[in-house]
Length: 198
Image (tube, rainbow, N blue to C red; front, side):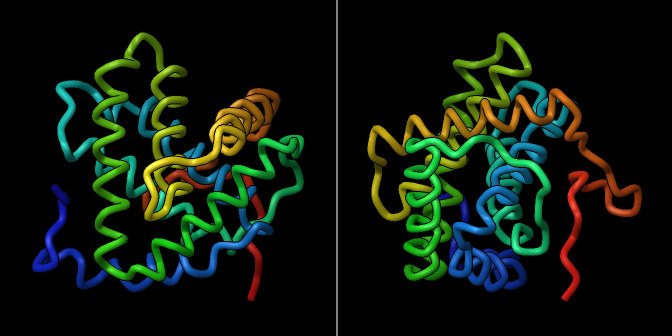
């Protein structure tokens, strides 16, 4: 059952930019999307925002980070990104196709995507709580896999493996110096990326 209803007041302000972001997600913006999602989810985990007992609200925060990363990704470009393997390429293609698929389905499809990320996150909270890394990895995997699936329920094995490789690639880069920067004015995690001027 969806966690958001069509009558939800919050939908009035957030549905359009998020659908537009999903519709316009490109392969070129994928590295920024991945890095922003990685950073946002890691900040939730490390910052203590996902402490048990876990509720729908916790899953909604994960969904919010994933979809916000889609919307923000065109405004950023990176000087570094992980190696592009066949699996990563397949995952990125699936993510773009899945995002476009959701956008084409309009608000009902967006609600389904949010609900799937929430449900998957709650499952991961129950099974991956041994370490912050395990939790961040499992939530990143759940969020991106739900996005890549679009209106389907599964992805190819190669794309699924690619999502794991994407996490490992960004983890390696963050470890050696791609450091998150936080905007004091909003409290939102921002990467040490360069925001493109328009």
